[in-house]
Length: 386
Length: 201
Ligand code: SF4
Ligand code: SF4
Image 1 (cartoon, rainbow over the protein chains, first blue to last red):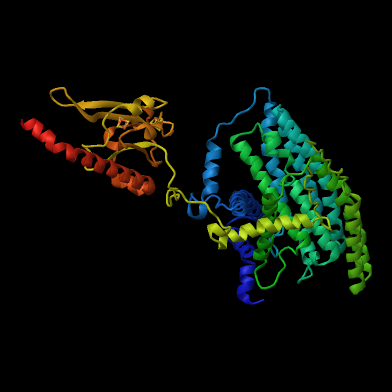
Image 2: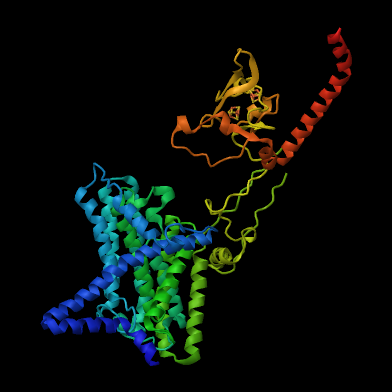
């Protein structure tokens, strides 16, 4: 790696170090440690909302293009100021609380929902040495924290005292808890292979181009994990909790103004962090040739987010039974098979293990889908004689 | 009677249909950058900058046609359109000279665009080919009673404008008017000498 590249590669790390050195001249040691925490924290706290704002723009633009329209293009060049205009609008809107709502919880839910979304940012390795907190149990932390999201959504729906919110909240609980299971199990092979729960060392285990997605179990795990992440952040086609056509707006029916915006913020930040974690676990994180590590990381993450948006533009919403069926009858057995396959792949080196693993996965996929085939009754045609 | 059987979709592997669907949206996405509107690209018209192409048959609000000058319109203030208008949004008053003799042209001609329902009845009933449907649409106003009440000066537009917006109809009507005029002139000429003689004697 040439010097210019390594300079670019570690530009953010060095920036932080310079700042800390500068502070170290004037302040005692403990203040420097505090400043180090505050700097990382502030960067993340700014990054989250900014990413959210521009994800909304990206989504509207891409979905627009896929539906043969332009998307927002009036506020600023290419509509770049649109998120700011939206933000101002959200802040100035009236905040309506239903009379019978549980006021405290109604207020608390949108605040609480942002917390886990922001907390996951902590363990995301944005680039070489760019993990805010390199926890030794990073993956476990991510799984634990991201599953808390169910709770505030349910709080909001319960506190609203509205049947649409209630149904939305119930669906959220069912959906998120179901998809937690295959999601967690899909991560297991990665942990087996990298023999670590720390996100940074998982990325290190994918040195060079040995990204996990290039192995049979990695590919299967990635697809399952990605499907589950889409379901986790309630994005189409898994947007049953906020199904507009059936539930008005689902769990956030009774929210307006900035509270509503906070729900949206959490959703988009979740979309980002979940994509980022998928990149970390399966797509080699910031590993990649030629470009600085953080460029690689953001490129891959935005590719996954693009895929999420692409799903949204393509697929109609699932039915509740289909949703549950996919999680429990297809994804869950596949993840179990995948764990077995990962073990085989590890102990049978070379092409044999590779082909064997691929064959087992393909056969189990075909078998499971064949078993899951719904019974479609014969179409009855009533002929009107004369 | 037999109905055509619904063809069964054959997808050998679960998921191929999903991929096909995704390809459709992806193709749309790519086409939106590289293709023209009529080939599958974006056909949005960026309104204030570019305007929609309006078909010749499009019509909404009525206007009045004049031939030579705005103070000699085709309208004779006969009031037929005023009576026939289903929403009663036309108001005509005949002009009178100083002696109080009717002048067969309108002194006041107002149409309330806020009330007009664009039916085109006035155009159909006018016996003097005076009132026709226009295609203006940027006529938003701040006050319903003031800005939507269009007076005679704003309603009167030259025949050239009519020929421009509806060339076919305008040509037909011009031809008919010319024929009628020629016929009138022909009918008038032989009658002139005896009539002239009559007045002389
Ligand atoms: S278009 Fe119909 S409603 Fe409008 S002025 Fe003519 S007759 Fe009246
Ligand atoms: S527009 Fe036609 S129908 Fe109406 S008053 Fe004038 S001449 Fe009569």
